[in-house]
Length: 481
RNA sequence: GGCCCCAUCGUCUAACGGUUAGGACACCACCCUUUCAAGGUGGCGAUACGGGUUCGAAUCCCGUUGGGGUCACCA
Image (cartoon, rainbow, N blue to C red; front, side):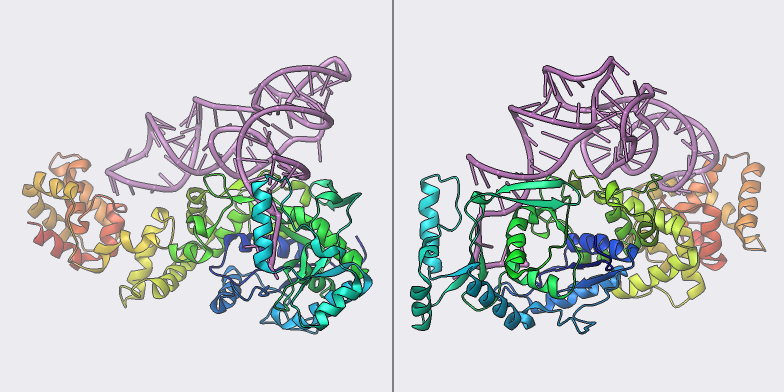
């Protein structure tokens, strides 16, 4: 590459939910730019006025904020190369379309959408192997074209692709990819509504914004020859092309919200940590040299290399994401940090904090950490900590029934514990068991059932300590103690 | 259908001509143990197929098969 610092970009289209694929591209683009000491920019591609969704742009930018990916330039961080919202640059794109028209690299086409649709259908019926534009208006003389345009006839501007020869795309990941020009289509550059298509707009903006590396999904590979041709027509240098492998969903198809795959917002709602999501995305198609699976974006910046990218598509596995998230909860974040995360999560998605007692809340979170996969798990696992009005499930009811006669004694034994700590409680429980020649497995279940209503709960001594003497004794009494 | 890309356990991946093909998730078993987890140990499980090249191929080449993408006045 040249001596200039790398500039990468993502160019999401504001049409709906913030996509996981966008987060994936943002990760690789920003990691590479940071590693190269370059810049990473976000340009919103909203030239399709039909699919435009006003709220979507903000949600995409919010997603990046949440993930902690900070663009060097974006619609929220404009600079002299902006604006970073493509529709605001339409005048610019029109100018370059005209330039292409003037130089003969492009031409006007007057076909109506209806005509095109009909001809395409006919081609399909004929089972033509090639279904692109039939190039009808390519034969128009310049005079004729000018005359019809001047007469007010509507038109699009199409690229005049070469009819023979080959175009070679040098992809960083795949080497030289050769396309026969005969396969190329005379793509629309400027639409009837005066807005550019992606092909024109992206190439113009990439060039004007100084983008050096176009890192995008593999679906763009086959239109890269078109992009090369546009760049050539404008006399501009081409960037380095890097087409990343697919993110797939379980059926082997492209990962997509439409198929029901979770969006980034869905993961956030689920209680997935941004760091864990990024980490997971980082191991889709790429791996750390030492095989480490738990790594941060900083680690990735340090170790990143295109040589370690695997080209087969990767199937997104939510189960593994959750495991990784649990790993973050247990091993990457400190207990205090987890307390803060749970708190933030509950105020955003839950019914708020279940208690005003900060110390009690923190103690409960600490108890639950090894049992949590997502922040969303917390509420459903901790009901009995916040209210005395909790359900008693079947197994717990059975444990209570089987040891009903033990309960009064047990309660008395616990009442005798002066120093209410897990150690003392444990000691008292053991003592009780020994004194009555009972196994621990006989004395603990009824206590657990009485104070939690479920057998699936943390270590009993710790559980009792956190619940507190008063609560525990009251619940035991209520259960028949 | 034409063109393009891709191909290691069910899934994510390691291997850059020489390994009993390694690790992780999931699953199963065992250990720890007061339940549930967490943690530990072990097990199951892959180079799609066929030809070459080579002393030697998961690795290089060709073909087949399979999967995906693309062929919009969407990106």
